[in-house]
Amino acid sequence: MKVTKQTFATFTRKKVPLANTIHHSSFIYNQFKKLNLYKFYSNRVINHLMSILISIFISGYHGKTTDFAKNSSCHRTTIAHFLNSGKWNDPLLSDALKQAVIEIIYSEAARTGNPVFCIVDDTIASKTKPLSRALHPIEDAYFHQSHLKKKQDYRHQAVAVMLSCNGIVLNYAFVMYNKSISKIDIVQNITKELPVPPVMSYFLCDCWYVSEKIINTFAQKGFHTIGALKTNRLLYPSGMKKKFSELAAELSVTHKEKVGSGKHFHNVLCLSEAKGMDIKMIKNAGGVITHPYGSVVRSLLVGILELCVEEIMVIGHTDCGVQGMDPKVLLKGLEKRGVEKKHMDIIRNSGIDLERWLAGFDSVEQSVEDTVFALQNHPLMPQDIKIYGFIMDSITGELKRI
Image 1 (cartoon, rainbow, N blue to C red):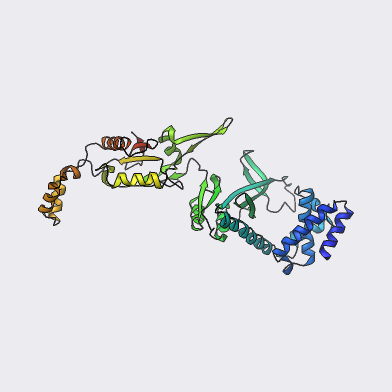
Image 2: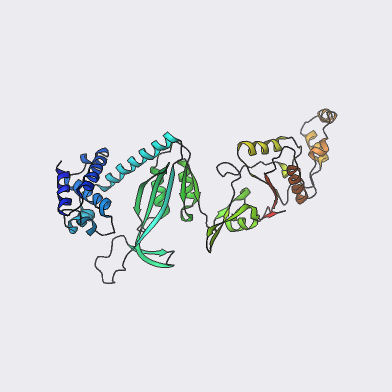
């Protein structure tokens, strides 16, 4: 083939091992053929692309066009002109590669049942700061905050999105960050392109990308989010707003583990009460157990056995309406709503103490303690289940363990 012969001649003149050249050229040619690139690109474009890829495979790439020129028949300025101003449709190549990555990763997920992981992070490449009188500064290079250097650094920055399944990791998108659009919006736009995976899948990221916008977009595509949290993030346990650092400080040491090495340790808050790290909530008036074998205890046991619940939190709150509730007032209210007294007498004659069943409590703290004690000593409660009691301030949302 004309393309292959030209490429082979180039590598032969530059004393590149011919066996490696043939192997890589054949592989790249077959991949281009699968992507149907020969239908859309000229031989000149194909030659440039093959030369660049073969150079990377054989001698590596260190950020300069001279790396490509070493293994090409073209001068480095010709290659630079092709990359900067060449008349070829690079979005077409990008879309073809994305489709190929989706087919490989999603097919593997469907075949094995293993989850798809979408991994997002940004990377940097520091550059030499240009002179103030430079006419042509480096394209898309800006000053970005460096967390390692703890100062502004002149560099390229790009957002990388990888897809992985069953040990296969492939690059899906690599987008230069030039400050015209936020990194959050870059990731959101890429996420909208993704098809829904065939199995339960996960989005992995650091604390920069844990935002409501990205989490919701990934959720719409069938991805659950696993990411780090900044300590100033706002959470809503039991519907009350609270900083992550405050919530972590209020929970006992049994809820936290220190991870890390050397002098660098981080507190990791464990809220994995149920499969998929969900929090299952059972609400009733007063948060009390009116019968040891009623629906509340039954629901707790189902959660433990079927949903992998490991911890139970009994949470009362201040200004609870059940506190000081008079059962006689409630029974009179039922009569006013048309409930006949004879029905109440039938229930009493069946052995049910209506007054006790409808009675409130004098102290929220004591009620929570009694509920925790009843659950801890319930004959059907597994001994490895941890049970805690809390009081939540209904005004500030402060959660206090008792």
